[in-house]
Image 1 (cartoon, rainbow, N blue to C red):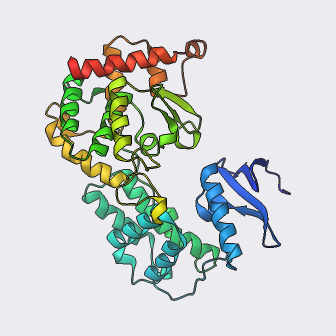
Image 2 (image 1 turned 45 degrees about the horizontal axis):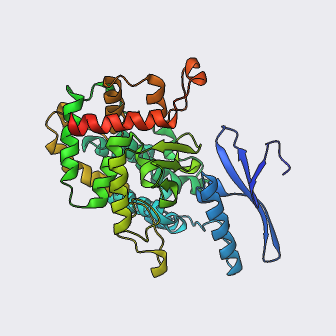
Length: 379
């Protein structure tokens, strides 16, 4: 590696470094088919933001090279083509769920750009799309994703000298909405009890267990959806979150209340071949020629919307999936659980100075979650 950045070898053929703006990147230097490939940026080329994704990307790249293809070849751009042509080429170059998301956004919100030449699209066209999304009440994160996907087209066109500047560069992203997450309801216990009863009425057992896990373990949505059965010890009330699926990027052991563990055992009996604990019902197992993947976030959101009308104690009827963590931590405070134990339950990386010297044991966190379960289900 010849530039002034520091490179750390993290896997065979893969190096970890940081870009000039401080973001982590994975660079591949390897040999395949008697050819040597130097400093291929897997993060920029294939959106590999974790080591696991980088390994997968490198494996896919080598497979393409063995077939005689060049996976690093730039997408060919020609002037006077329509925006839809460029976007379709971008979509074809992506993979998996990322590809699906871009296609949905393109067909749903970017129709006004489809027939325009790339050179004729201005920042006003982008602002008009964003304003329409605001009027329809879309969340700021959703709006920013639309802007980001439009930006893919212009960024690639800039690399190929078709345009000099991207109109999305002059359009500010939407600020994240601020909400009072500490005062979600007038009665946290009543709300938790209503959620518990509503969850028990969910017909799909897999979704039912998922929401029970949110309510009784205070975990993040992304961590739960990506959990694999190999991460859980059904005999020891313990789950080990892999580093790549946690917010802190560190392995996190956490406890499960015994009644919830029994539900997980039932779920495993129903789906003995699944890789993920909450695996999509719409993708068959690898033995049938298709890759296993977690339940889609959108399907979870639809199921959550069915729950909300049954929760009468909610303020304004608003509740986000992440609010389960705030609800759980509020109830743990009501139960006089020690703050350090609550920090351990929530797996917060930043603790107070005292917390550095005082760490809750596994027995304490399990005891806290058992109390939370009894508090909600028995009162």
